[in-house]
Each structure stands twice: as structure tokens, then as C-alpha cells.
Picture (cartoon, rainbow, N blue to C red):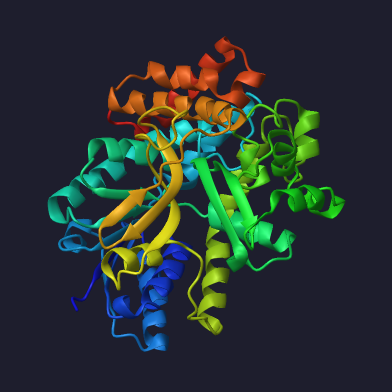
Amino acid sequence: MKRRKIVFIGAGSFIFTRSLSRDILTFEALRDAELWLVDINPDHLELARRMVQRYVDEGHYPAAVHCTTDRREALPGADGILCTIQVGGWEALQDELGIPSRFGIEAAIGDTRGVWGFFCYLRTIQPIVDILRDVQELCPDAVFLNYTNPMAMICRTVQTLYPDLKIIGLCHSVQETIMLLARWLDADVRDMTYTCAGLNHTAFYLKLQCKGEDAYPRLREIVEDPAIYETEKVRIEMFKHLGYFVTESSYHNSEYNGWFRKRDDLMMRYCPPRKFDGSPGEYMSSMIRKMASSRDHRREDMLEKWFGEPISLDRGHEFASYIFNACFGDGTLFEFNGNVRNFGLISNLPDGACVEVPILAGPNGLKPTRIGRMPPELALLNNIESQTEEMAVEAYLNRDKSLIYKAVYYDPYTSAKLSLDEMDQMVDQLFEACGKYHSFW
């Protein structure tokens, strides 16, 4: 059987590279793979090589590990590609999160949608478009799995520009949430079955079963437990009022709607920030400065611990290795939730937008599942979020900066707090501060 070639672009993302390489090697058909690690930072690349090589050595795998700072050296003949790049780093976050913070728009993480997500998209999209241009030239049959955020906007863009490539966006939130719900239900996650669909980070479990029985009645009882409620206030409130459980975590999910962050008392009740003693509007900038200053120390601690302790060779719960095995390994079919364009998949969400739906991976490719109509109370929220993402994508595709302003106008959280003029001032400042990342205008 042909030795498979898998390329990690952004291999300096230690956690992703470590876990995904471990998982890939656990499959018999992939244990002798050529693993190519690509990163523009040579120091990070060497650390990633040491991590991956440790798995190869301790697992006695006949795999080969290669490193390069030039992706065009790695891509020819690739069967699978994993994209985990980050563009700009902490310096970019200082402006992207700090400027909205001074206007009272506080992010939890800020990498998905909303004003922070739109500017994260603008600084990230051109490098990924360039990567896909090389993929189209050098390995057009490869399966390209994107882990970089903002997931929906990136996938919508590159799936539009390169419609013949096999591009799927992957996230943790679906599988991590089903494991959470299984724990609450005191069930084995293998007994849980579900249909989950919507948008990345705002997908809902339209069907949720445990051992073939509807699990929602029991879940409604469980979330009344104060100890459970305290752990996931936002998601449980959404569940109580909308009737379906949402994927991404409470702290992150509070960014995507206008219900939990529009007043300080609501934020402190549902999604309080970490303790901070300082002036209003400076919380986010202060947090970023602290994270940046401790970055090297935390990285060294992580590396010292990882290289100094025993490691597990057991496969994790990320989807990527299962997808690769299904498509070009032993051919075992695998169903997962992924991000693709909406062509007849969810009938009451925007046509052509990026949606998250079940996908079947196998030797014949990647086949998305048609969901039909979502419940209207879910579709309405997803429509608002999706159409703001659509405007941001069209801003890039058509080189029309005005659409970023308009996308911000309709972002649920931002529009719940600011006037149109205030939003204009905020976006003006963001374009001025972040323009160095947007050479395509």
C-alpha cells in the first residue's frame, strides 16, 4: 500500500500538531506515513519535530518526519493537509480586542464572528488563500482540513475560490459538547446519537438520544441542578428558552447574540470576566498584555512537562485522523460535523453560506448531509449571524471595506450596545490600527 503523505501547515501550533500526529499514527494504514511539518518560525518548527518524533520513536512506528519553512517543498503529492496557522499573534490581538473593549464591546475569545472575528478574518484570509493556491497547483487531490478560525468565514471564502478542492473546516465543539452531555446524563458517550447542525460555534443538537431514547426530557431536569447550571449558564439559558442545546461553550457563546453582554450586570451574572482592577475599557488590553508577557514562560513550562513525563499513544477525539483514514487509509467510513457551503443542506439558512452539518467521509470523498429546515427559533439566530459573516466575506472578495461596517451594524452584541456612529468610529480605528494586515485592499 502506498505510503501516505500528510502535511501540517502551521506546525508550530504545538497542541494541534502533537495530538493530531499521535492520532494519525494509531491507524494501521497511516502508521508509516510521511509527516511533513511546515512553519515560518524555525524554533517552533524544531520543537514540533521533537514532539512528533517522540511519538514515532515510542510507538515504534515506521513513519518519517520532515521539516521545512517552505510549504511548496512539502506539498507535492500530499494526500492530506492540516491547516492550523495563526497570523499576527499577540500584537494583532492588542488592537482587535483592545479597541472594541474601549467602546464597551468586551470579547470572551473573539475569533469567530462579531467585530473582532471580522478583523481576525481580514488578517488571516489572504495567507490561507495563498496556501490553497499552492494546493491547487501542487496536490489538487489532497484532503484539506482547516482548523484556523474564524472557521465559517475562512471556509466560505476558500470553498468559493477553489470549488474543486476537498476543503473541510473542523472544530472541537460538537464532540466536546456531546461528551459533556453524556457526563451530565451519566451515560457512555458511545450510547449517544445525535443530529447537530447550524453554524460553527452556534450549531444545535436537533436530535439528541441516549440508547435510542430522546435524551432532552432528562436533560431538562438535569440542568435545574444549581451545580450544573453554574458551569454553563449561557448555554443552559439558551436551552431553556430555545429548546435545543447549542455547541460552543457558554463564555464563548455569549459573544454571538445580544442577550448576555449588553449590560454590565448581565455580563457579571452570566459570563463574568476574570478579576481585573483597572479603568473601564482596559480589561481586554490588560489581559492580552499579561498573556503575551507570560507566553514564553508558559511555553517552557509546557515543554518541560511534556518532554519530562510519560506520554500516551492512545488516539484522541479529534476528527482529522478518522477522516484521513476514511478517505485514503483503510476506507472505514466516518461521520463527523464539518463546515461546508450551504447548497441545499439547510433550507432556511442563506444559500451558499458556510454551515456546519454532518458529513460522511470515505474512499469516494466527503458527502454532506441534507438537514432540511431548522426550527425557526434557531434559524433566525443563525441567519443573523450568517448574514453578517456573508457581508465580511463579500468585503474581501469584492474589496469593499464598506461591507465590514455594515456587518458590524447587524452584529447582535455590538448593535445592542452602540449607536451607528459609535460603530463607525470603532471600525475606523480598527482599520487604521490593523491596516498592515490587509494589503489586499
